[in-house]
Length: 145
Image (cartoon, rainbow, N blue to C red; front, side, top):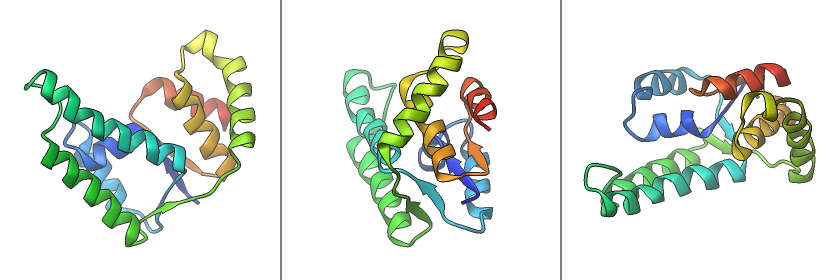
């Protein structure tokens, strides 16, 4: 596996955001599927579904339900086509790695739980590159190797 994306990368690839052109360009140029863990897929899909609630609360935020349904359908189609690939991992091992990174870096750098888990998943799965648009998470990934 060459690259493992975090949720910021996936959101940019599947929702219109500032980094969308860069994420889409990178994803289209990849020579292998984009690997992800089920936890990662859950967070990504949950973030998309949350957009319906955000839009209902404030029409200037989030997305309409039909837009969210299309984003999810696009994701599912890409997974079905094998362009994005769920990669099983031992969550106990990932959590042990995450706990180590948390001890080493969170108090110094302020990392969120799922961000640490994504970096630990990438390391566990042997990714050579970690795809993120968050500078703190990039620093954590560099620390983790």
